Image (cartoon, rainbow over all chains, first blue to last red; front, top):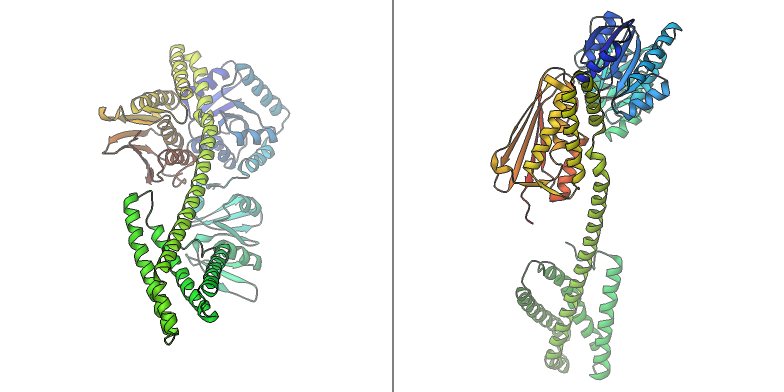
Length: 246
Length: 351
């Protein structure tokens, strides 16, 4: 089995390597100290098992999950994170609380092995994990995987989100990116003082609206600073009115 | 500040009622004991009392700006004697003038106006003193109420601070990660593990020893922070490079205990820990005339920099400082491309 360690603290990496050593069937093929490099490595090297820290430079362990096109077995390691632990427990994902014992580590490995043998992919569990982990907090950035690269979009740079079937087109000041997600997901996780659902298909960043033009009896058009024009439904108009208080 | 009597409905009612009673008493006296005609007694008492009622509204402003806490009693007394003399003279002359013009042909009444001057002045003095006393009483009650409210607010804040104190002392994320490092070092480098255990113990002992009210020297705080940073150095290795520049003259400066470590924790959490390359953390202490300036600069990530202003950690320190010093602008932050700067000003304590 090929394994990757994504952990930003050297002593913690040393420890994992030492604990893995006795398992002759596990080979560590890479160690990474930030989430970005880690995610790239997972997609390229396609390991069977990943030891993933939550608090990492550049991207959190949870954001790493969103960027994967290959889903290995993931064992999370974390020191203390109430959110993460709640999310782990809900989704029966295996996690190690630092500091952990050799025995506890071995147990986690056994569990991974039996899942691999039973061909029980973690995928659904992980998607669920992301949703639970981010619920109730405001996103400060969105990560997107493109065929060429991985992109981190600070929410301030977002002009608007547009629903396109099972995907969301994220329009930013510089470009646009497609992400597989639902409108509801973003509606619940973006700061409602900045982002407003103005239409079935649009969530707009209010700080980028330049004006509202009447369109028909109940509908309006929001004109953004870059010139983009978005339909505003009557409920969307009401929400805008509440936020911008005009 | 508005007249407190006229700013409340009840005040206005009492005010009108009082002057009506005063006018009625004067009317009865004039009508019964001085045998003045009914209409003369009535107009006389209405003019005199109505005019004083108006004057008494003005007395408030005089009372308001002669504050017992700020001025000497002698000054205030002199002020009031001058004000009372002016007020009463003005009151008697204007009232008499008005009445003279209402009844220009009644010689008896005009005589009465002159002979009654002494007791009118006596009544005026009494009214002036009464109004003044009532106003001082109102101010006293208002101040008392404000003070009690402020006291209870401070008490609640202090209690909250105490409750949060222990919780904030030990950052669990730091503690468990350090323990994990120790766990790792026990196998690879037992001696270093031992060193780290001792440092961690010192750190915990230091924070347990202090309460949120205790004062320590910068020297104590700095040596505690060096222990903290050395532990973090084991965790972060080359990624953490710190310098502390504290001249000798700041070392004995008194500061609230545990004010420094959270600043470093903040710099690590939002700076060093978010970048994978080596980062800098520099602390500079400067002694000014009446305060100590602490400047903490740390590298931040330029690509994932999304946090603006102060995080929870800094807000907590700012709250604690404003509680202790009664000033709200003791923490300033600024950030550019990849450097975050926190400036803390700690005033000298006069105890």
